[in-house]
Image (cartoon, rainbow over all chains, first blue to last red; front, side):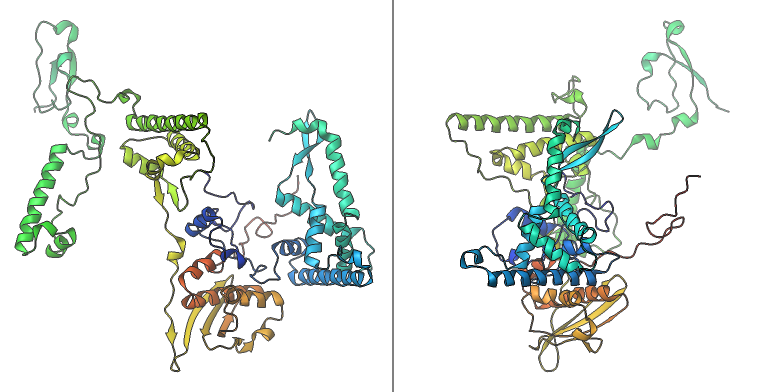
Length: 214
Length: 374
């Protein structure tokens, strides 16, 4: 019955009837897949593509989202610059490691910075979250399930705050980010530790899980 | 001075409302004591209450007679115009009769209305008459019996171990459910929002059944087709200059910028904006990506010579305006299927996001003044 998708933002310039655009070229090559969705898209109006996305091979929706989260005061140019420098730094470090490694170790080293980034983000995403619920005058930390968007956002936010606050102030942001991403992709580092702490808290507060009513 | 005359009427005679023609019934002496009432009839009472009458109702015979007369008139007209009466369409009638014609009763579309629903003995025909919404409830009962029939069929299949979930489902893509008004029209009854919601719930339940495809035509009768969005796109035809080279022009807008673009099918990838090369005009990579987005998506990167002009707005807005203008100009060069792909990629929608106005009593569009408790 719900033909209208609930808009995530509380007020959007678009009518909720509008659907999200798909800028990637490869999706339009295959004809038969997802016929229902394609049929639905044929009869619905589509939103305009944002200025951060394009059909280029180098544009990645997750990376664009990360750039936006990292951006401060609307300085997109700077945020994008930091991101490209981070990816470059990751590549350099990994290639250096590759050339100094033994034959067996060479296969395990991931040189593609995009893959490193995605792996690191995956390792940082929490599985379960906590929320404050008031019961009988006291506030309890109750474990709740998280949506995919929320998990992704939490991982990105943790990475950025970790780099901004807990690192040596004389290092550049891209260096800090590269270090943290490489550590996270190997399941080490402060961000992954923070994720594990959250999981432990949720496990400890398992008793209050029934306080959640939704 | 024939003013209101008090008439003494027996209660037995006070039935139909049209007895106000000035005749007053005089009761018999028998029931004078018990049943007589003083009733003053004024001329205002005798006037017909037009508002209470409701929409004009026509009897079946009246409608039939009008239609017959219309057909006879149509045949006469066809004979007069020396045309074949059998194939004389409404358009021919409009052409032959002058615009200032009288309102032809045959043109009037009589709205569907309920016929009399009870017989001579006063007994209603339909078994659900006393629910008040007989067609609605009978429809709901029909649908539910269909659901039960499908479930029974499914149970029979299960008992024979022939039940499988990968049956063809009813395709609901490209159509929408009937609106409440449309359902009311088809049932010739008024239904409430709650009733309509229940109707939609029940029919969706029927659709959701694995073997519900048996009732496909029934369900599709309650769906209305939605028009395909890409058909609303206006594509300019290609123009050719003196040397025979194809070109097309288009405009685009974003925030406060307007751009105008000319695409020439020359074969070089030159890109000029306001006389400058795109690399000098847009030093930022993101803007150049935006300019090339539509051409890259359509796989026509090196084919065109782009000559454009843009004014107003900021860096990003100008890039967005140019992108929209290029996409629109590119439509003339593309085959049909690709136009729909461009639309689904979000290249053809003008971005409605503009700067939100500042409101009085606030610092900006959203920011409020410092809140002071007292």
